[in-house]
Image 1 (spheres, rainbow, N blue to C red):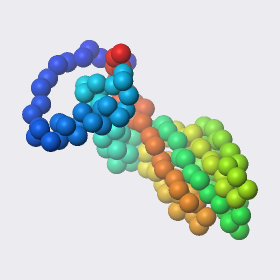
Image 2: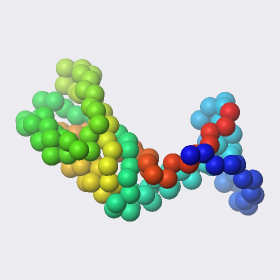
Image 3: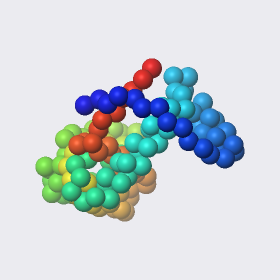
Length: 145
């Protein structure tokens, strides 16, 4: 459900505004201050939603890991089977001889999704990883060109 745009003003230190403008410029030519601020606010609201245990979220767990780590694949599979209700889809990519990229699309209660991500990303052999989510129930965004 989209809502009407409302104009308001904010006051901030000039150096912070300059940093915001530089950040906006790095994000692309179609980005403007308003869109950047909307994205930042959305991100903070999602972070807040994850702090509310029962809030429904959707997103992805992205991880890079060494597939030669003994037992890692089995432990990842066990966690994913334990959370089959929250997992929408997975994609597995062989990056090179030693490294795999796995992306797990998830949807469910924030506390369950965050716990699953913590379990997976904390395993020995997982080199890098991140949980990225959006709140499902409160998505009322308006994107402008």
